[in-house]
Length: 409
Image 1 (spheres, rainbow, N blue to C red):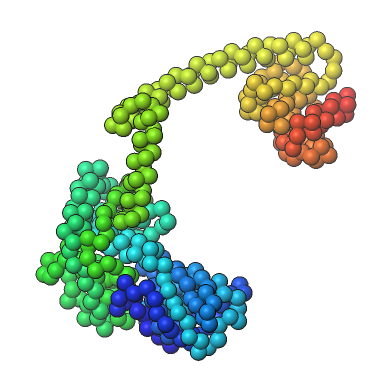
Image 2 (image 1 turned 90 degrees about the vertical axis):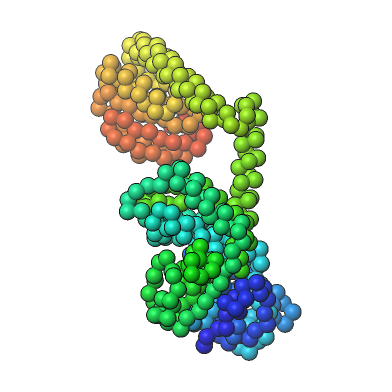
């Protein structure tokens, strides 16, 4: 059975009374097909509507809607327990209007921006995705990447067209051949009925494209298009942007963030980049100085370790320090082991609760960790010459080290 899709006749209609004509079940929840629906099913890059369905005074969520082809039934996924609905039930379907209108703004904004790239630069839209935080389109320019100036020009053009409040019309055709009378920028042959969305008037519309989504009746309702960035993607330009309320929310959030950054750096927003450049240079200089100091400290500590090792006949030397990271301890241990013979070095990093074993002789570090760490709530592994174990507590790590000291003679 075909569902009568009210959104095609009037995308501003938010509610309808309908009859349940099909029922499925998934994960213990009812999925219903209705004789008519205001819900747009996911498709063409546009998410499905969300909303509610009420039956006999009980209200349930409609979390998604999907169809079986453009002329097939629309199935409404509900949070109602399986068995809630019966064939013939009269239900009231209602969409979340804020979500629907946002999708309408974004979808028409996408058409207009894609049309702008096509008109200005000959770019062809090869991909469209409407996400939670932004919309993306993939514009193919034969491998050429757009410049910042071209992005700015496209943004200016599309917003001027939005503010001109151009009419938006949707025309249905019985088949693809009939639709070819329209000046679409991109032909998409397919079977069945075809709807063509036109922004502006014939014979020279601002944009014209085949699409089955929902759109506002005039471009002014899009509000604005804000282009965020452009990245290379498979030889194309992936444009990140948003439209209408979503774009406004993002711009307001970014503006507040810039204001806070400028306050923290005691500068004007226009000077933030130069201040960050200075900050990056300072950090780079500090990292260089820190590296020199770390090398100096490691050499001093290695000398101290070797002095302790040479003063003892014990086959195991245990060392603990929070001064060095785990990787730095490994490097320090290797440097010390290279100047000793036959010793097992146990290097502990208390903050990371990590124990490193380094052997310059016959002790098999990986085997020692594998056979003993688990006894002390540890895990790890490694090679014969070095291994590491991570523990849940500093006490467990120290107990593991003491056990190895007793074990290795």
